[in-house]
Length: 350
Image 1 (cartoon, rainbow, N blue to C red):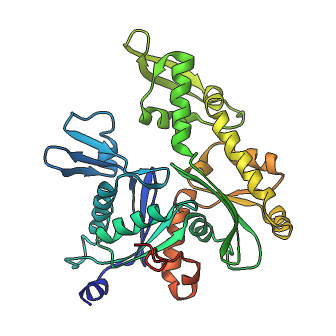
Image 2 (cartoon, one colour):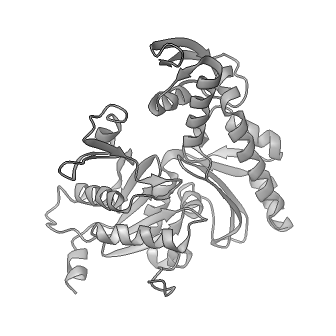
Image 3 (cartoon, rainbow, N blue to C red):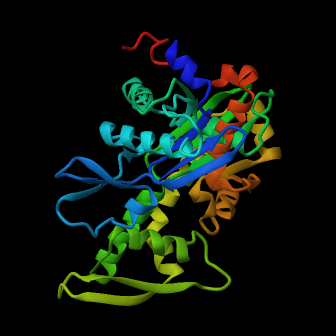
């Protein structure tokens, strides 16, 4: 009863709890938080030093007593306690300027398609432990499709490829549900790892994760560009142990990420092949939509179009499509509740 009373003074929130970034949407306000899913903890005091942007700048630069953690791996919670603290931090940050002394918001969380019951319960428990009065779960591709403005409730096919930091979710949606899908633990982080491995094998340079990500954003492409791009790669020379820098081009990075990109494209084709013929005919007319950070990868849409012989569209503001989808569902919850996943409590999972 007291929890319900406090909930009346709290703000309904939609959260895209991503491996790389966490985005928070507040009903009637829009996106209020977009920060890295990173937490810095002082191991001597067990207290949080920084969260989000402030914690990310510490990666690889901390003394021994400060531990910088990414509590989500491949789209699911890997460190329960730190995840709970991070979510609680964001909930409190949203309610900081209001008069709510003990926020108990209703929270909607987007989760990957292949999440297990144990992992799903971990998400619910972490969000409840962080102060939510109720946890609502929605599948990431469904949220992304709604955020992209696709008619998911109609008897027509909508296809989403949501490539984030930890997972790539590929789904064909019709009548409010997923018809055929693939969920890959292969996304932006794996591209960073491929660049790190390439630098080691090709140039004997050891790169940091943040450096690899920066290079990816600056010059990565999956098809040759009309105007080649280049940047400086800085790291530690594995032979001398000293700092080293070289100039690299988009062709180098294209070679580095070629294998994971091919795997993603192959899985997109496999998903289409397992889709009922009536829905495939819709797809060839409407095409598929790209969301997530991967949608910004140069030439990715063109490559998929070439391989699938289908139109490919990049959603408006693809990085925020999932969290905007949770916001739209919260705004029309009475009509859209049927597309949500049941709670693990409803499934009898204790």
